[in-house]
Length: 465
Picture (cartoon, rainbow, N blue to C red):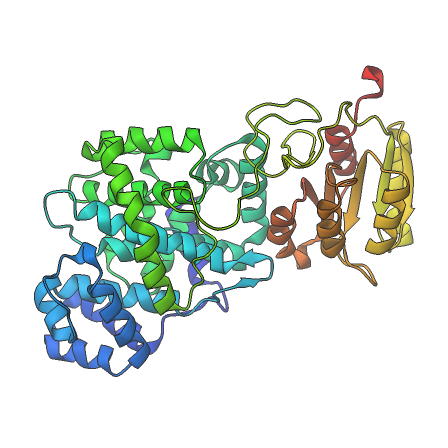
């Protein structure tokens, strides 16, 4: 997808949140730098919430101020006009989105990760020589803002990439490039420009996945983009401190980018949770979901198999097997045999659609079982677990998404592959479906070949019984 097409996609999107008027005015000032410091201070001080959050942020240790700052004019004097403006806009952007799960997307977890990344970026920047041309906390905080756009306006494309990344163990940005020709970093840059943020900030966000994409960097932005890239990986590691593969990547990049050894990285990681907690509290974000650098404290996290206990597929990364859909939760008893059932459960309230799907199932040598709603599908599956389930989203009584969640919570059913059936008008449910544990989905109106492909993908081959 071209840069022009991405820009048009963002510009033409209806209903995407815009910055508050105060933040928009500050963003403009950041670009032209023509207003007196007093004007920018007055705009921030007129917004009590923004002022409180700004003062919390500028007093964070990684900004290196010698004493408590109580006035924005002092912050500008110590940090610089551009950085204070960038910070104000970044903080304002966080405030225009939800802070909890909504429409299947966990905004709370998204912002938790983003705040971790912002704190990591600030701590990294404090350890390297030279002053960065933009506020690294804001750049890291907003590095994945393109995901928020995709979730709201291109959920089908985002869901496709998310499923591909999960199933093939790919980095999300690579899956996005493969599946729809663009990526969330490019989208995020266009969002920043729509918000009238500085070109530099947009370019940092556009290229922050340079390492994954093997892309070159200009000398003028190299250090800050490396900081943001490393901060994203560190934030990911803080939520999964036992992941050895992640730790290896972190050590490699820290050494390559800034000459950081494992000890230096550990020193940074140890400081992040407490700083992030203080910042998250001021932003109204629950930081309880993230891990700690020491890996201790709180309830024990769920553990997942790296090798599927059902089909023995290796290098698993998620909660369900990318090959067969089996649950990877360690507490689930591993199955001694692969699934052999030739039954395919079809949960669809439309008689015509059920009959069409059942015809395809029979043609492939499988046995169709019919249900008209989610609860009926669960009841049937419990009595006689099928080889896979085709689950419509919109059904009377219990809908498909609720049924999917119940299936994944049931140890007897949790390893059954589930393919969600959804329409273009319900495309926002793709994201929720993937996060709830769907192995795949089919968009209506679907063809017999599409249904056939999904059944062949997830059902055991009768010749290998």
